[in-house]
Image 1 (cartoon, rainbow, N blue to C red):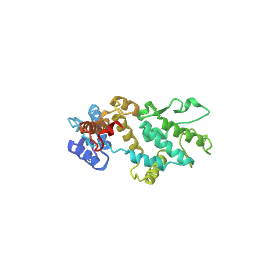
Image 2 (tube, rainbow, N blue to C red):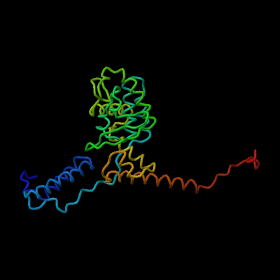
Image 3 (cartoon, one colour):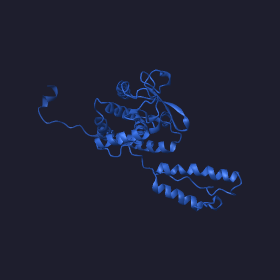
Length: 273
């Protein structure tokens, strides 16, 4: 890529995007396009360039493959790996439950606030079953907690009250204070390895949340609002996967209905006995 913007041509930008697609996750690489294009448009407006090298350039297409999700068996194994009465066990189980229940991003969960003495500043209301998260662009939204998530969070809070860093305004606490992004990521990796799920990471729960919500019949717009998505591009991949799964279930049900009844051999009067 030339260091002089005036020398940048379309082929340079295409080579850059191709390199990003080779090194990054498809969604991350595709996000480079809307990030770079406004820069060249601004340079044109300011008279630094006569034309944008990205004029009439189409956005890279994402693979149609649905993002990976946790299977029921994997999720059960992860939850079993978090069973126990210790502070770490309760904390880790609560983390798994809140990720699964809300589909929230890692930073949104890590930055939750909790100060019992000033309840109006708390981001969680277990009685109402809701959590307030601060999403990308500092856009606030409300997510809903399942009964199992509320139970796990309540168990964690009872032990958190006796933690040596309980006075900190952070909801999640660890051995050194605030359990932030990196600490939560390490927790999930450790529990994942214990459960035999080596690929466990925070965003995998977000994938799973979207898939489960759409499979249950929730509309795309509802899922976008609850999980804080602004683009339908990623969500449409989940929707195709969910519809494929529903179609598979319908086919199985139809085959079951068409299957002839099996008559049992035996006494003719056995049906009335």
